[in-house]
Length: 262
Image 1 (cartoon, rainbow, N blue to C red):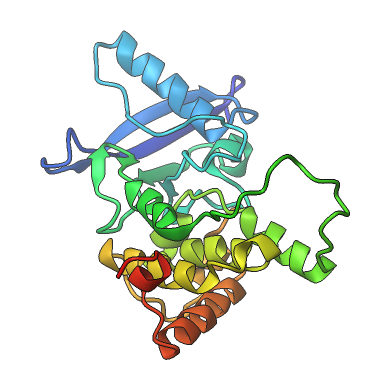
Image 2: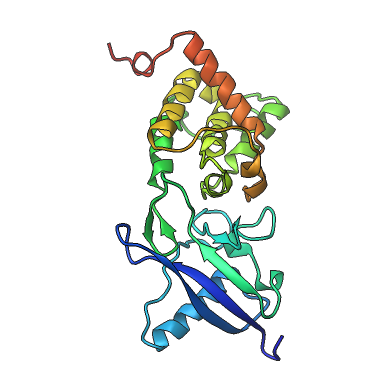
């Protein structure tokens, strides 16, 4: 390592647009502080590219605090990089060694088409949420914490699954490009609470069917999704989703019936 920081070689996926071919392009990343986050390192590289009259690398980011899910990247073949339970924006350059080559790619999934460089379209997740990831029961003003008794095990289950930030790492890591962990987290989060019970069956049917319509692969419980999840959500949620879905299907509950249509 030099006196100023790390000297790295980046291999970055560059793709001008969704309908154009892409390729890996090599860039030097010199004198990078080990205390920088991975996105701060990309900022420095982009500043140098702009100074040299080159097109900066496009990548998603927002809060940079590990809670928005925007920063999804494949880093050396791993979703969000080498550190478990860590988003790309919270990954620090001290996780790498001087002289290392780093390969940076976008999420690879049919349902996540590349828009430009490292940016993918994750609106499929939005449509899954819109299909049933909500409750329609009026809740009114906030209640006291103890006004609606909820078993601690149910509250813990709901909170654990509510931690999902929708980053898509589960899809990117899955060999089938399945969105089952994301969908299951949203279904289980609401299904564990009293407020989510009236639409529980409708929710499972509608969200699973929307997930399939978006072109995500099927789940074979390979388990790579929970390993890649920066929030540590368990594949137990997928089994809960499957139980709800099978129960709703077995009782011949159709989405249109739940919505009140004829």
